[in-house]
Image (cartoon, rainbow, N blue to C red; front, top):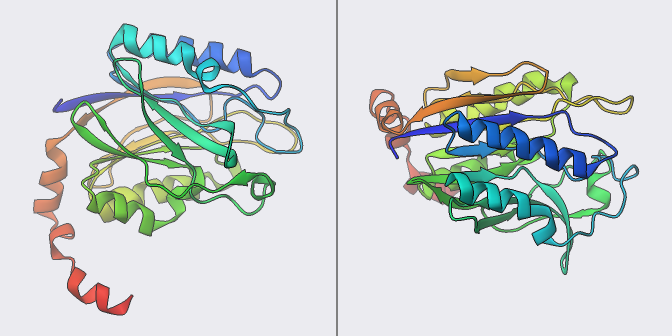
Length: 264
C-alpha cells in the first residue's frame, strides 16, 4: 500500500474501569475504520491505571483482552496497534503491545524493552528483550512503548532492519510534552522515516498525561498533531517520501558503519 491511512486514537483512560476503556477504544477504532483508516494506533496501558500502587491485579487472558479488537480488525480488514496492556506471563508482569493483522490474528507481541526506573513502573514490570517489527500492508513497521523512544540506538537498529514506519504507544506526562514531541521528531529526522506517536490524555491528582499525539514524515515535518483532549484523527502516509527524504538529504547513505564498529 503506497499511501497508508493511520488513525491516531488519543483517549482519556479511565482509572477505574478497563471495560469502559475497551468499549471506548473499540468504538473509536470502528469509527476510524469507517472513515478510511487501515491502521489504528492506541495508547499505553489502557487496561489498568498507570501507577502500580493504584492498580488491581491485571492478570487476564490474552484472548479476553484482545477479542473485540481481533473481531474488529477482521471485519474491517485493518491492522490495530492495540496500545499496550499489563500482561501476567511466565516471565512476570510485562508491558505488552499487541499488533493485530487484517485477518484478525496477532502478528506481533512486543514487550517494552526500557522500563522507566521511577513512576513505580520499575518495581513491577519486567523488561522485554526482543525488537518489535511487523508488516502492515507492505510497510515494515517498528513498535516502541513510551520510554523506548528516548533511546536512539533502538530506533537505529529498527531502521537498519528496514523499518519505514515507527509507531510509539505512549503514556507521557503533560509537564514533559515538549520532550515527547521533540523525541518523535528527532527519531523521524535521524532515521528518515515516518513516526506516529499516540499518547493518553487523562488526568488525576497524581499524574496528568498530555496528549499531543503526533505523526511526522521522514523530513521531520508534522503531518498531524492533536491537542490535549480525546480525539481520533487520520494521518495519510506516503511511502515514496522515505526515499525522497534519503535522496534529498543523504544522511542515511552517508553513514560510516565500518568506522563506527571500530569504536564499539
